[in-house]
Length: 194
Image 1 (cartoon, rainbow, N blue to C red):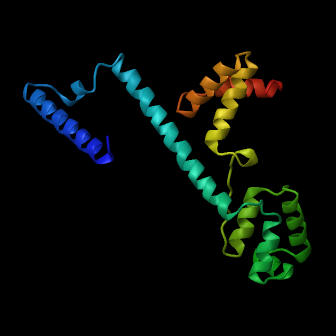
Image 2 (cartoon, rainbow, N blue to C red):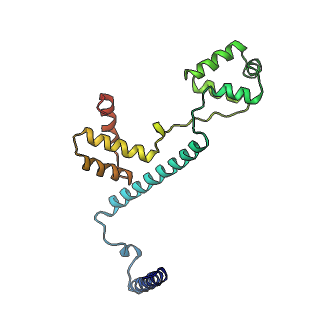
Image 3 (cartoon, helix red, strand yellow):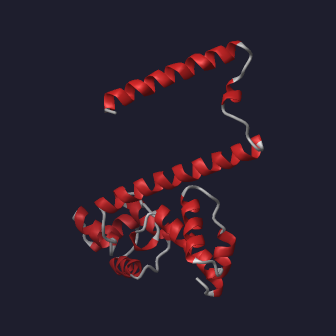
């Protein structure tokens, strides 16, 4: 069967289905009746809605982080030092903008290099030269959120003594939007079992 024949057959089936729905609609059937019988309408609907939202949130996050990693594939080190150089400022001039001495600026830049500076201080430093502070949280080792979610689900089931096949099935289900047992995961991680 060629592609054209297949498309014609599908369009014929869709036309037949539309006509059947129209006839049944004239006899009093509602749109919900065409969807089939649900086991428990409310619970099943909420569960499917949560799964859909979970998948979409993960997909949106992964796309945004993937774009960021393509543009910025290394960790910025000494961000303010690089910013000061890019703006053509000396440390003294930056200190005048921020309201402190050159020695104080050097101390803050050194603390920033050690990741020992508070976010509100960094925000005020950026604001003093007309810039904005952007903070990102992302999974370690360059994983996407979906990959991390599946991997942690797999590790959780393996730590509970499940065989590899069961752990893989659970990881795939979580990847499709099933609920991850984060409370148990956090407990096992605190105990050092993960």
